Image (cartoon, rainbow, N blue to C red; front, side, top):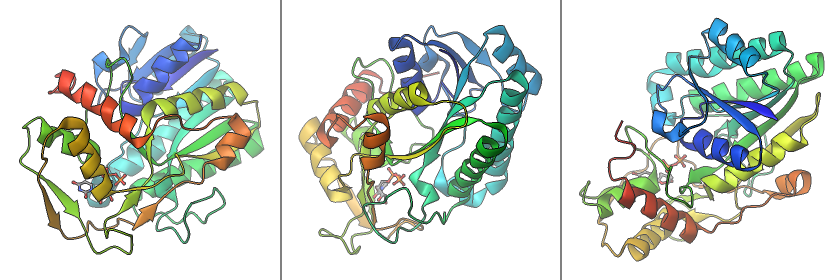
Length: 326
Ligand code: UDP
């Protein structure tokens, strides 16, 4: 298929674009490079444009005879979305609606959408199944939920086929070491710990040690970015016009912050000092996916363990201590 990948110069988008190409699809990346990195797109055809630039989006769709869209382009910092919700509403909601409009105009009826476990808010139960109530507690999570609703309505009314893939904690880097995680500022646990191992930071704060979990620190479901990418390709290949897929993408296994710290110490051989600090606002104690629907619907399940995630991330960070340096 000829696939437009929005946000294909970003973290998850670049890994998905790479796997799409490997699976024989023709990929065109569209990214405004607000958060993405041009080198992450490699030699894939690249259109530098915002989703709000309708003329350029429509032109890219028609010039490349696009048949389906993978939509990653969005801001994804939960904390920033609380402090400055306007740019999240504008970029994630208005931008996505503009994309859907352009797709309708171009007669493109398949989209894989990058959603999030942040749409669930504070979970009432774990592991989380897809029918768990969605009550996001951040503007970021809300923007993702709004687009899930829009997709459901567009599917019903216009026959658009969609997959809303709700990621848990995306982490790790491509096995060949060519692309990986590079956020500015970095806020995610694993890259922060690895930056300490590289001597770029003194220590990492452990946010909360009094949670109702076995060791008192938060539990998350860390999923390898290449496993996410594989699920995206499988979803795209399954989609038909009018089809609606809402799937959690996680491993089904949780790891605590303390476990992740220990693992990063083992993999890097560095002491990685940490400071125990107060809880971070809005962090639920445990977020773990029930990934059985994705297995049933797509025949997909995560292949990589948390150790392999940390090893691949370490390989990337060691080889690219300044990220893409762009
Ligand atoms: N965390 C932490 N210190 C940090 C960053 C994160 O203790 O400097 C914890 C955070 O509270 C959460 C887990 O690590 O329980 C994963 O956080 P991250 O920001 O990587 O992803 P999130 O779960 O927020 O999407």
